[in-house]
Image (cartoon, protein in one colour):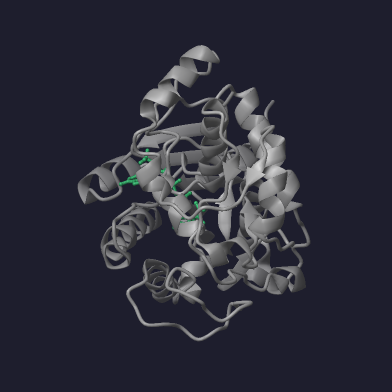
Length: 353
Ligand SMILES: NC(=O)c1ccc[n+]([C@@H]2O[C@H](COP(=O)([O-])OP(=O)(O)OC[C@H]3O[C@@H](n4cnc5c(N)ncnc54)[C@H](OP(=O)(O)O)[C@@H]3O)[C@@H](O)[C@H]2O)c1
């Protein structure tokens, strides 16, 4: 007879670069039942069930989430993209409020709500910010949706039997299709197209960005940290920076990435990927055909605007990861090996040649 599964996770944003890797990790642990929420939904199998729901539509949320009375943990990693920092606030706060309110209303056994954040909490998106950023650094001028989400969650938790945690990763790298923030995919598709066109690999960012100090967060490492923070009692009502644990500069890593793709790294040339890659859809479609790749649309593999954003950081983007270590999370990932592993995975899945 199968043993009862003690934990029931509701992963909000189950197809994101963060959410889908978290779902995989929870399933692998074997002690979780997982309910994944997204608009697109998906096929349910074993201990994983997908629910298609539009979190911006309150009545849809009430109708679809009203049955989740067994939920013990909410892992919130949904995201709505918008063209400006100010416009991000309303939809992203509304989705969190709608999801948590609906589950909390029916799940008497709710124990924890995990919130996925990022370095925007520290103003990393605005310009050179204080580094390494620490979890207790003072706030900055709003609007910033991660800050509003945490403020709402903290206020909501007061007097409740559940606790919260917040995770603050750097740029997250892992497998996902069709999402707006996917740096590993940006690099992989840019390199594959460069190769197809017989070009060397040129760093397209700002001159200063080639030499600034950065760090990344592997999506699997982040999944492990997220579950740790949600289940370790000492982490209750705490925020944690989560990064791979090593630092790098593109000036060192870029030539190695070029080498992985069998390319020479030529001198950097600042350019907007959003502009120069906008006419490459026919090249991509021809590559899919010629190399027998799985049919992915150019839209699904393009997050060029995010590439321009990250390659525009001509200042250090690093946060102190020692709080998580002090609280007991000691995992780390080698960033170069992480990139190569993701590229290998994309090749094995026949997404890139
Ligand atoms: N990606 C990064 O590098 C990175 C780095 C640091 C922090 N973060 C933060 O982590 C969080 C998650 O980011 P992500 O990159 O994983 O996002 P993502 O890849 O864009 O995934 C977003 C998820 O939310 C779902 N979703 C969007 N709108 C929805 C709606 N109206 N109703 C239901 N589901 C909806 C999407 O599925 P459907 O499209 O099917 O609805 C998808 O599963 C964000 O707060 C982001 O700022 C991301």
